[in-house]
Image 1: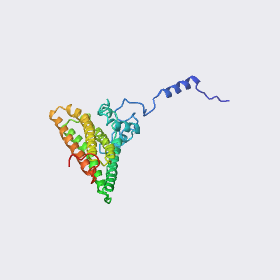
Image 2: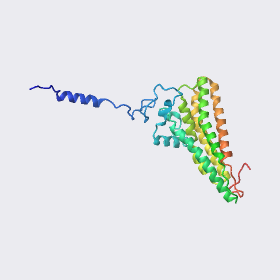
Image 3: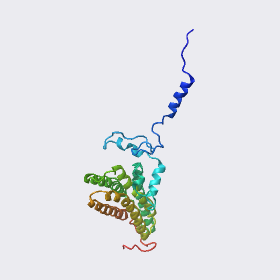
Image 4: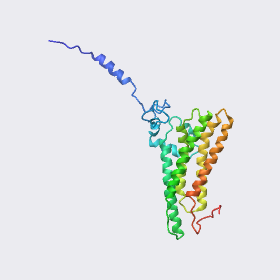
Length: 264
């Protein structure tokens, strides 16, 4: 009769304990990393190139709760997480992309709806301007994506973008546009003075969010003249706010409702 040697129970228990003591790979609860792993993201891009799609993949893997928190957070200047410090550990592109896309939709739909209401109150036939959709797409995406990329490129060329990645720049710019979504919804109300007030509130909140996040980066630069770039950002932001008002929120009833428009 042949005998087969069998390991004792003590050795088996020791092996099991070693296996159980090893941490699982990709622990979502780990917040010690800045590269995207362990923050609810699937994986990091590794050595992917800046121009490679894989480089940005993990920036879209973010939970809805975080995106909603960041959107609402832009409306509260008194929040302790108002500045980009709350984006630094895990700046995402998912929230900014859908913020800009939703804004395009709301700008077109609400301006068309408001135009219908105004035409009805003025006893005029309704005529939809579908060119507003392409206008909204161009204006929102160029300002929300193109402007921050160009701004980051200028900073990088000047050597003052250290520690501020292009992803975070786009994230800050994109989230700053969230306030225009409720503004566009409320601007359906056919009261000229109210629309000016709403546009002013949207301009102030989104502009302050940009300045609060961008100016510390410029102030930390060795070149003191870099701080003047905040004037360029403010001027561009003012131009976009005026374009929003002129292109999407300028509709008037022949018989004004409420106080008169102060610009007329």
